Length: 517
Image (cartoon, rainbow, N blue to C red; front, side, top):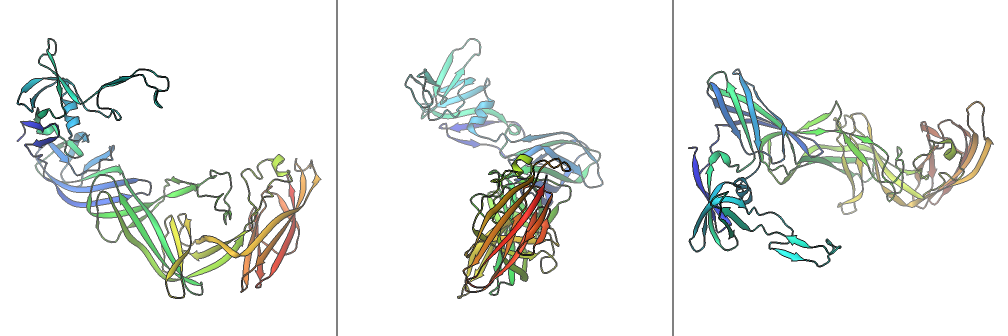
């Protein structure tokens, strides 16, 4: 029954409702939940409604508080046709402050502790947040928030102001604290919103049950992937498990839902400390840090969970995304000695500065490489964190490093940097810088030579190979004039030397490069 009921506030704190909210008949048939990694989800609910020919009202509850009302869509998926005349999202939930705010300039009835009954129009008295103050205060003391010693007036919102007549008065101030027994408000059931609600006015062309689909976007949903890689004793194979962690803070429960995880691509860009991250990364973790931005793209990968599951509000759920045993892996070491700052090779003046780019480090990085192919994986891997373990002599797994990967298509390789080796050391220095021609008539710029010497040492008890990576950062037009060891060109400005070292051995590499601006 829809009509006016009494709403009582007992002792200014407790209150009761003497009615129930009636909803249209709804039968949940299917819920599909697509979750993105950036605090966003798309919900598609299939429901059936018993409608009469003509105008009907549909009310949907159990909705997320963070629902985006501009994204709501209701459509018929059956043979019967319906059209939407109006839709409203109601999220201003029931509370004493909200209800009193609605009744400003309307009649209410107040019963005090001593039994006095006062009726009139509510003029003010909405309790609002006013810092730590709840009473009148007038002062001139200087404080952190009032350094100019200006008058301070904090108004109290704990009292109700009512008037029997809005024009003639009188006006009565009623103290709320420990004074009011109940407040009576004339209410209709439709005025109350106990939980977020969607209200539709639909027009049905015929009587009967109409299956429909309601879709909308909501914030408060997200997911991430964590990978566990356990190396074998010989470090040639590894077991891999991938776990998806799904979180829900949207304000609603999604019961028996089909959950799909949407992987989005990222766009690499200059990081906040001004260092360029190359293919193998810079070996100083205190300088280089991950800095990426999510970017929606046309072709994405969706990871559907195998079984339906319930994702409750304020819940974090973990599900296994993949598992593979004895994947072939390759462990190796890289010395990437040059610390290349932003701007190298982008200005002729900087490229011809002899001191530009001579900073270096002595750390040698530990890397693990594996292929994402049909070897038990067989699917694109979403962006996530890798934790790499190796078992000790008692068989207990110990973490030896961690790294993060970008979205990795099927067929690509995964490079993981685990940290730095204590027993492998490198050094890098400039041995020569000579301007051959400061103003080349052909290139419109200068020609200059640079000599580099790299030293690598192995203090292990066994042999090891170090990959020495050099970035020819000064300019894109270069030639290696001489080198003490053969190298491989990795890209337009990167070369690599492979240096095998016996236990306790040290080797030096030197080369000279000519740049043409």
